[in-house]
Image 1 (cartoon, rainbow, N blue to C red):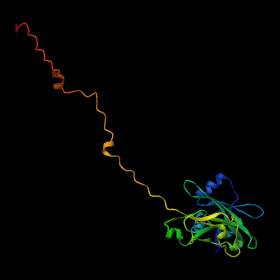
Image 2 (image 1 turned 90 degrees about the horizontal axis):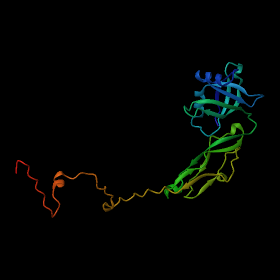
Image 3 (image 1 turned 120 degrees about the horizontal axis):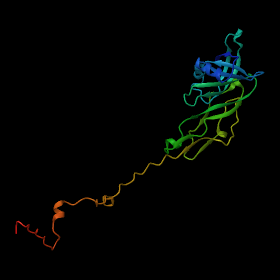
Image 4 (image 1 turned 45 degrees about the horizontal axis):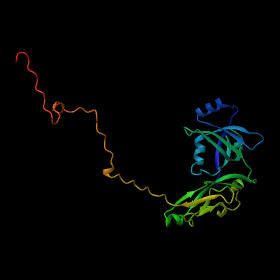
Length: 237
């Protein structure tokens, strides 16, 4: 892995309010572990985000340069943890760990599938990546960019496990060998359209019983009966 340089600055003040002020000023608080005691530092969030872009899932190896110190006080370290705001996704805090070139460390490395599975090409299956990172043990300078997973032979129902992966020289995979890494699953079943109900089975609206009948119908005499003639008034008599 290519080692990148990150400039950091020591800080004395700590606490939530101090951290808020630092973020408003465009800095990110961080802690450097691995020495006699944890050291509070601050750094440029843009520099960190640029470093990890395209390397997600793999632990980054850095050369730390202390700003304002003679010789830069250079140290070798890794980015152990990054904390982001769940809403704004802004970088809030960084944990750095100092390492030694001759001592093995445990880190996480990204898994990358290689090739097109036969089950995808011939059976229209779907490749499913089960794990995206593996835990490995190696020297800091031997951290690989990725561990490749050859999926070309997978048919539908086949599973590629950690035991089938080939780690680079000097790297030992710590993730359990039986852990599934990738599999090919059957294609999703197409939805069957629901047939429309026959017209005869359609529900008709009920007759409105409160509707008034026409006046002519109200005035019509009942069938089989004669309408009564109006009685004469006194003048007509």
